[in-house]
Length: 310
Ligand SMILES: [Zn+2]
Image (cartoon, rainbow, N blue to C red):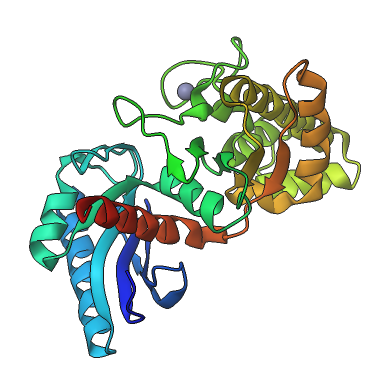
C-alpha cells in the first residue's frame, strides 16, 4: 500500500440507493457516484447492478491512471463477513447471496463484504468522530437503530454476523410492536420513524422526527412529551450499551443525529442519570455523514488485503 495511485472500489448498498466511490488507502475519496438500488426489481437484479457499478468504477479508476487494488461492499441486514455472504436483508431482499465471491470473480480483485452499520462505525472510529478513542460504540438512528462496537479499529461481527443489534434491546415491555415481531424494542420507541409514528398517533397529524424535535423546542407540549419519551428510551439503550462495552466514545449517526443539541443535550443528561459506577462516555455526533458506509467498506477491503498479503 505504498504507491500513490492505488484506490479501492467501494459500494454502500442501501434499500433505496447505492453510494459508490473510489477511495485512497488514506481514506480520501477521489471519485463518488450514486445509483438507485430499485430493490423492487428483486435481489438478482440488484446484485447485477452492484457488479456492473463496481466493474464500472474499476474501469473508471484505470482510465484515470489509478490502480484499483481491492473492492469493499457494504450491505444491510445479516452479513457473514467471514464467508462473504449477504445472509438476509429485509429492505434489499438478499437471502444467502455470496456477494463477495461474485464481485471477486467479476472484478478480479480481492473483495470484502461488510455490514453497513458496522463498516460505518469502522469509518467513524478510524477517520471520524471516534478517532483516537480506542473503544467506540457507533449508533445509527434512522428508520431503525443499529450499532457497531469498534475496538482498536476493528468492529465486532458476532458469531452469526448479527452483532450490534442494539435497536432490539427490550426497553419498554408494554411498548409498541417492533418490526422484529416483539413489542417494546428500542427502535420501536426511539427510531426516527417511531418518533414520527408516535406523534401522529397522539396528535392525528403526520410529522417527521425532525418536525417533532422542532415543535418540542418551540414548546408544544405533545411534541415535547413524544421527544422526551424517545430520548429516555434511547438513554436506556445507551446505558445498556455502556454497561456491556465500557467505551470511551459513543458516536450517534443517522438522520436523528441531525437534531443536534435538541437531541444531544437531553440525551447526555438522561444517560448521566442512568450510569452509576460506570464511566461516562463522550457522546458525540457522527462526523462523516452518509459517506461513512462507503469509507468503511474501503477500510474493510484494505484490512482484508493486508491480512491476505501477510
Ligand atoms: Zn425488535
